[in-house]
Length: 371
Ligand code: SPD
Image: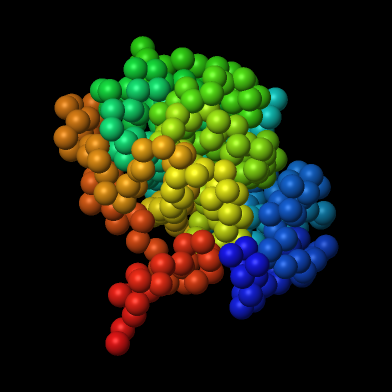
């Protein structure tokens, strides 16, 4: 299978570097898209990619003042050649933590926005999509989940969603950056309310280290709510991390992992699926949803189960509509329902073509083909 992955795929070349106000390329380099993941960990680029607010607009990636007041536009290697901008009403907070730069601003179109190292993590208006999907896709796919671990997720939104599940007894969360939690408590109380659930146990620290010491088979579900794999989150898309997750899950336990955009990162998705197919001996699927303020307007979820009782991810065995009080707990569900759950696994044809592990089985392909 793996050998086929590169066949027939045109490895696109992308300009990575800086462009000045007058449109001139400065320090531009051409690198193939398949190498962007590696390039993303280039510390020099990382340092330059942090966004700033210029003339009342926040841009991801940033605009910075260059020599002689010229604006310099930075490409983000995770989504080269594009930028996403929001009008800033007010900057509410900007501080450097031990790990990253944290920015909170009030936007005119999406309410308050949380930005880490220049990348939008959530906005008040559309955060419901990501938090609801990453929590309920896995938890509605298994019967009576009890022990759940969240990796990252310091804003608390995923905790808020998990707490809708009355069967859950323990919700552990391991977040590396305490400042993200404090900032969320101050500026995003609708998300940070998740920390108020008495079932929540907070650990501040490195999740990879935490998982290495976790008892084998402890969790029914693990949810990885990380930032993009640039800088501190890089190791969260690598094989050793997935191996520790599989070890910490019970047989037939489930992982749901943030898995970027099918428009931008098919190579990364292919890599992650390839690792997870070898690591999780149950099933491995990819689902997606639309989030207007994330690059390319979509976000994906990699969802896997360990060997054990089989898990049918596509048809939720534990539908949210049947869990007492779940639809209204803390606040109404805004995006997720059982129909959205099943629909999220339907993949566009180009994704099935480009990510070889997501291709239809020969029977499905025959059924889907137009005769
Ligand atoms: N490209 C942005 C991906 C952000 C994923 N993490 C979001 C955190 C929300 N709890």
